[in-house]
Length: 115
Image (cartoon, rainbow, N blue to C red; front, top):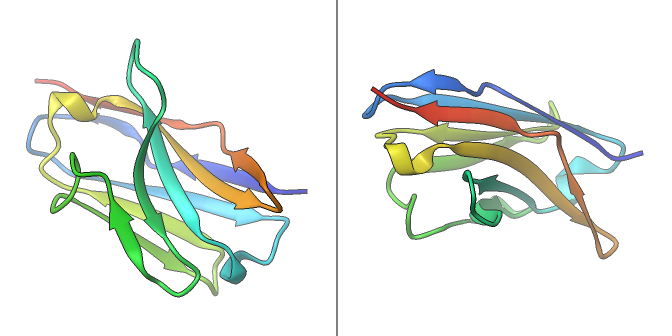
């Protein structure tokens, strides 16, 4: 079955960086677009970034220029490099794949940006 396991979250000061990782299994990873979403306290889950099976990327306006999504098809991994973090980036970050019309989510990893 599809499994997504996020890691790499933590606490960081404003202006700092973190790299999130998502290990995927249970499907042909290289064939699917992969995404990162986040849910801030008291807010709905929102799109952060997507990388297609062909390595094309797109980002939410709020993270454009600061975050970079990448993937390693040999390792079935997707990454989110986050730079210049600010308090508004505090959230639980989720890895996502839509497979056969059904969305799959990991358990999430907490990112806290605070001084």
